[in-house]
Image 1: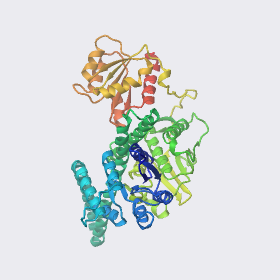
Image 2 (image 1 turned 135 degrees about the vertical axis):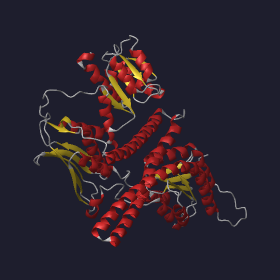
Image 3 (image 1 turned 90 degrees about the vertical axis):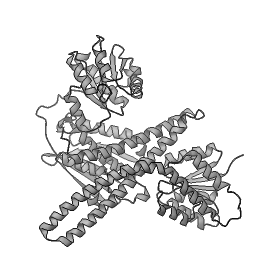
Image 4 (image 1 turned 180 degrees about the vertical axis):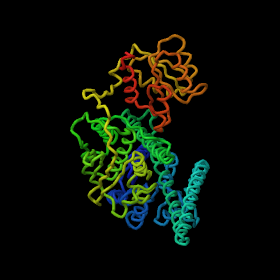
Length: 580
């Protein structure tokens, strides 16, 4: 027997697909609106038995949808279940005020969701009590949520305590500095008031950042945990399994981006890095960024013209730049442009019009920035939107990192923007030409797909203590037919290299038990066999590469390891004359 119709209001395609899958597996009919307004219009034409609505949506959020339902005579009796990452008393009270029957906090368990659906669709008959059943539902939801969150709060409490101590330390330092200025300027009253305002603003920014960070982490985690439970289901089709795996991979990539942003900000503020200027063919460098960004973000570029504009026609034209940090600056600016540009164009490139400088630019036809807000966009934790609208994702530190990186490279960044027309960010860096021009006919190294490579006459030693990491490398190299040896720690790697067997390459993990990668590499290099060693590490700071190369490693690859990067690095080593 076909079950009831349920309308869901959810702006996230990933969340909507997961929720639809759960409900349809139980036999329910499901319609989806991408926002509250669209869901309400669906209900007018097809009145459902139940509404399930996300709270934070553009155009009409979950509270507004619930309110509209409860004032419509034809829909007001239909129960509403709110889904939210928010669980403060203020949010719960607001849900009651607009007439919602219950709420569920993300991420939720499938069984928990289905229990509430069944309870709201088929409530128990009135037992004679005068207690408000809607209030009872909210009280039950609140109790269940409190039990669920209790363990999370315990682990988060220590982290929040440490963050609070750091914030207090920074506020204390700022207050001390302000007090010294007060004494010098003899304006104690005015400056104390200013210090108080700064401290309060810092506290507000801290709270907003933690709330936003929590949301940014929970959103991909919800998809990862949810789809991980489905992917092992023998009843799903290969196409569905591939789709679910794609959602999991996207969620992991987003989480890694959040971690990278926080680490980048910490390293920059610690001033523990130095510029690393190398010769660079600027056109080829920027084209590679264009191709990489296009491949990574192609699902968001259907309505966009994305192009690179060169300031010098000669593709062999070379300058000295810090390639890693310059790439990070441009990727951050391109991500920012893509975030606020739904149609039209995004273009980037460089000019040499300003004497002594190379000026990189990123232009877009997006929403633009209000004139009175431009001075705020590079401030830490600032986002030019209200958190509850959730229209644009992000942690609020991307442009802060960008500005600090530009200044670290000795440059400046400026922005021009018009609301409704778009924005242009310009990065001005000192222009330094190499003393010796790179050979013009030297072709760039092309990455080779695994199936094109045949290393059947080669032997690689993988020093890795984590079996799953070794299995990943083994699978990545499987189609190359290379012989693979496994050492579970640095000591085993040294012993394998000293027993007389020919080894063409070593992939050496840095952090291992018994003997770490640095010590093992040092002992192997002393044997004088000339075996190239590539460090594999989960450390992602830029000065780690300098440390690795100084220790005698041939190269470094950062975890999580990408197949293309691994193949390119091995190919480079095997193509060297001494290794053929």
